[in-house]
Length: 246
Length: 240
Image 1 (tube, chains in turn blue, green):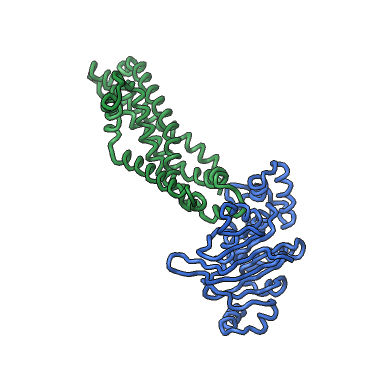
Image 2 (cartoon, helix red, strand yellow):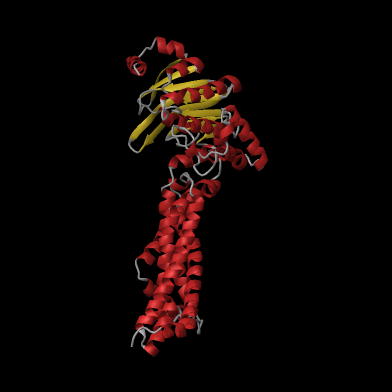
């Protein structure tokens, strides 16, 4: 097993505010890492740094042997290897479900239209939306949109998938269908996954490692079950108390 | 001296010829204005997060320069009356050419000057329409595109462009109609468009009521055609 993602001494500031503070993190190939923490703790910024949607203020990022900032010109290559699923789905509103999913393979991977459509149909089938390929995003429910978004991210066959609070914008009854799709990916594909979420059940079930962030730092990490059962820091105890009460 | 229909029928051929010229200037003007406006509009936001991510290296100063040039163009055009622009191009520009080069008999045809004026004038306003629409595209969609590993060019053509274009249609309709009516100002440089034809007929027969009524109706027909074509495009592109 080799390191798929490495962050060395990473800092990120927006103006005067430092959002990430000396983060050191190494994620192995095939590992499923769940990141939790209060809002404003820097967890979203952390995963946005991994596919270079945010550029590091200092420190080093290594994704699949590509070094940032040293090899800044290879950002696009990193993004081909690292897919992302967003809280707000961000499907292209003018494209059907099928077109959304086929877009990556045909444009970023330069496949011909027919082959890209085949891949897209396959993936829509996998996320249980085979019958919805001609629907526009506006005609789909939140849960369905997020499943299309997951299929879209998978379509360029990345090595890593990042999830930025994928269920936070969903109605409660739709959270399950999205989590199920994510569990299947973790189980079947051996994909490296970094998931920012508040779904503790999901963390316990499929997470290999749980990371608790607060104030731009990694405060605690370890096996999800152990970390949740025996939180060492007051801050994590406090946080878990709040999450469980929902 | 009541209302005489025969005055209208007699002057119709000349007025139609004027309307035809108005139409030609307008169409050439808005086609050129669109090209000009898209370039200047994108130029004004070159290198900003609205067009993907911020550039680095040599592209950084280049994008700043592009923003300044586009901004200067838009402000200059918006800040001066179109009638002054037309006069400058038709009367003053040839003198400027003569002053700085050896070319003695440089001249711009009145019709050419009219078309160029509309192109640059409409272009400046369209640039702002383009900029506004592009900036309003949800940043999350750009991030989704970038996270798929597509290039900036693909992002602009396949994501930003189509979404922004839908939002441009209503304000573009406004601008096209304004440009059509602005062609009437070229009466000052002697282009034989519709208003000029009306003015000339009026000067010979003094039938103001019949002539200006006909001229007004002709403008109304042309602007209606423009508005309806845009509505048709808008309906076709409606997505949500």
